[in-house]
Length: 311
Image (cartoon, rainbow, N blue to C red; front, side, top):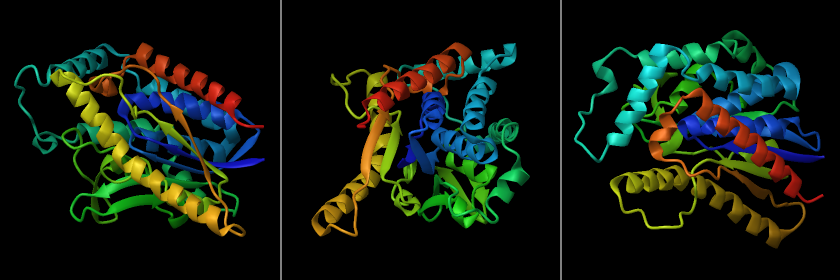
């Protein structure tokens, strides 16, 4: 049985795609997941998958992922209006001058809403107990963030008993939307600035392969010329920068393993990629139909990915 670690890139609402990918990958019985990692929305998906696997297996993990994204959708009248306003403002950026407001200028509603949403699906006390005396075969979970003041990279680890709902909030704390999140006396921002997602510690879990769920396109067919297109491409490149550095580390170790031979072995890297033409503001979009489309696209892409795997 193939042992794999799955790394989930961050990307706001686009990570509903990751939820669908994980639901399908976890249901496949031809491999065993020994590690999961994620940043921002990818961290949410990785946490739900890890937590679900431990408390009820692949079926429970898939159920949690689907229900979270259904619950995250803007369904009430007020929520729909707020979603349309936020996405609309994002699409106006670069066309008109808009005021920028610090998240410290108003109460921390975003962080509180995120925490409430996540704790509807993850029991905080049970999450802590799962990390107290883990069995040797328990999958590793890593959540990426960055220390705002020191600039240090931080990968919260289940093996160090560091995974909390607050740590996941720290991983998703996008500046100008969220305040910095305090965890264990340090202040953190979105892991986009450090590891998106954490990869270099995944070999500690002993995988034969690392599967990366990429939501930011690596390449574009045409030159971006409008303000909106330039902003989209800049965001994609920023989101991929740390991931490419993480993958370079694994590929370099693979080169050493190829030269040295036994007892060293290479770790195969494979990718599941979101292949939809989406703009940057849509990362904020929580319309139910949009999230459902992404989740279903993730399931379909994962199905094709599994079909392409060598026997």
